[in-house]
Length: 204
Image (cartoon, rainbow, N blue to C red; front, top):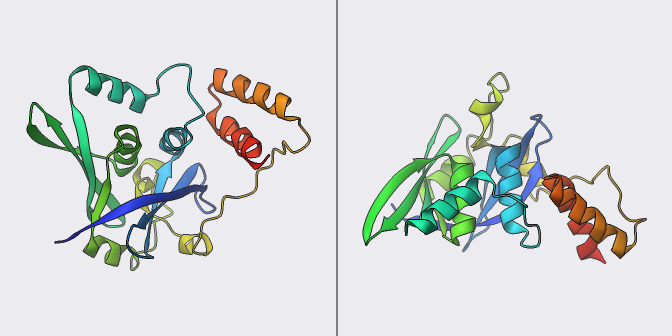
């Protein structure tokens, strides 16, 4: 089976599942998207890895894993989303130490959070991309933990998954105030707020 490389298109709040986020992966040489429902913590960790200017004062779980791996010369070479069963994605970390390769099972959201930190490529199989377009539903009766890393329901949020407008408006603040608020949010480990402030700074 041929591997297809994926890029991260973005993260959006899921309109149909409380506390869940939608991670959208794009195939590199094509137009298809792979939408995955992930939890708030994993979404936050991925967002921080994508936003280089937000640095937590203490390491998050995925940062700790990266620091631990660096200390013991373990490298994550790539991530493969290798299976899709009942709407849930399964992934593997392809790791290497002393030229010995190991395959470690991981939740897809964790695997992608680590792939970003190791600058490792993300792949899936062509048949999974084909399947994902067919099974676009998640059982609403499942617990949140069970629905994480599963296929997104809401028709890929009108195909493009534009991030919902924030209720917190920072347009009236000066740049100096925004930088101060950003520092305060990072120190308080409120990374969701920090990301919104960073977006406003970027617009300026």
